[in-house]
Length: 245
Image (cartoon, rainbow, N blue to C red; front, side):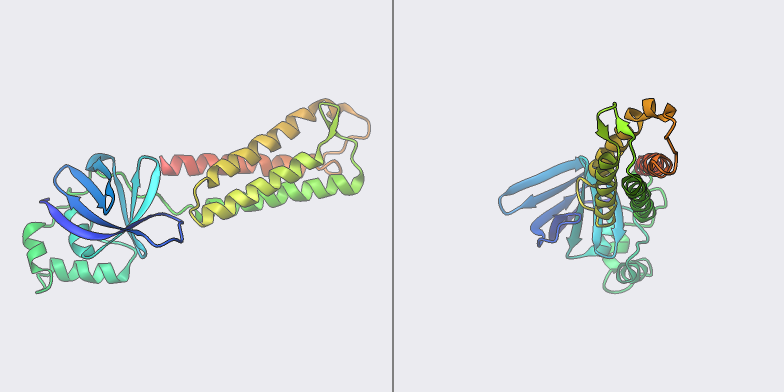
């Protein structure tokens, strides 16, 4: 890898606002982004996760996911040792560069193909869409459980005071909102899911003393559906955390 000086725009993943124009400085050890009002950040390459996608280069730095577009995507990709992406356009540019095309011939000289070049970069995050859809489905189960309890006029109460079904409604809404936010890569999506999980678990654990009531019903009181949905959302959140780690 050698130094590369490029320009482009950067934005937070999921942000619909136009990106900020930046200068991109890349050397053997660090990546720096500088805007018109000053430096945005400098990061060692060993802690920067890079994934080339259709909408640009997704960078994972300091707990944030940034989307970077450059004035020479092939040069930037090859400087980092990337050899493929989900963007057909960038794949064509990389193929031309590695084949010694006129437009990118200089790039091949400066950045020779090295299968180990990107080995120190963390792998890109896997697609979280299946997990997000699963969390939305889990929220739907909790919501159905709340509706069943409400329709039956369930006497099951949390800690003996408050009906359980409102907790499950809040849990379902938080899970659905978090799942939809995950699909859109919005910040705070997983915090919403965690909030829903905590509310659901509190509602379930608070109703345990009522399980011994003669009128208690796993289905009629909504416990079965709410419990399955809550536990499923927790398992899916754990899978998402493991994948991202």
